Image (cartoon, rainbow, N blue to C red; front, side, top):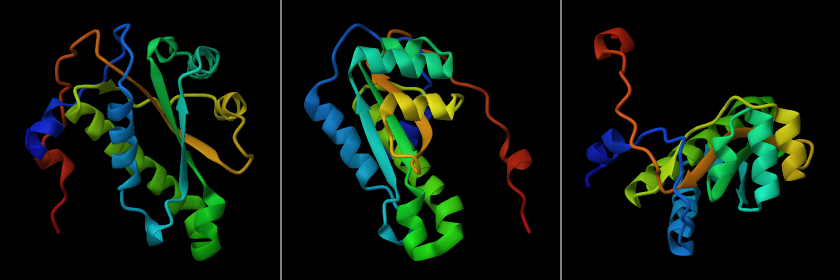
Amino acid sequence: MNFMELVQARRSVRAFADRRVEPDKLRAVLEAANQAPSAGNLQAYEIYQVTEPRVRAALARAADQSFIAESPVTLVFCANPGRAARKYGARGRDLYALQDATIAAAYAQLAATELDLATVWVGAFDTATVSAALRAPGDWVPVAILPLGYADELPSASSRRSLDDLVHEL
């Protein structure tokens, strides 16, 4: 499928089949995230690959979204502000690390779609609870939770804003 077809095919899936994700597919998703552009090529983000049911359940509770526990794999993207701050100061700490983590997560979503896997971007969660479940260092900031697996549903496409409403030409 070409890139535009891939973008059109991506859906937010919240029901996952009871089927494991093949290691080569998971690695391809992670490699795609690793290829995402980042400020100064610092890659000021970290990725947690969570397969442990107990930790996935804790993430589900932190987000109040039970489907996270039902996915065979959950990826958690964390900003690493200190990594960006060393080169870019406050702007790196407050913005670039966040941007790095989000674009890596977006690349992972698109790669998953290409591989017939499903994801949903989860951004509503209690940050402290997610950090505790991951045992993340204190300065790493969870940005996105991506449950990953094979879809057990096929949601229809969501409506989008028109370009006339979205784009502001100057």
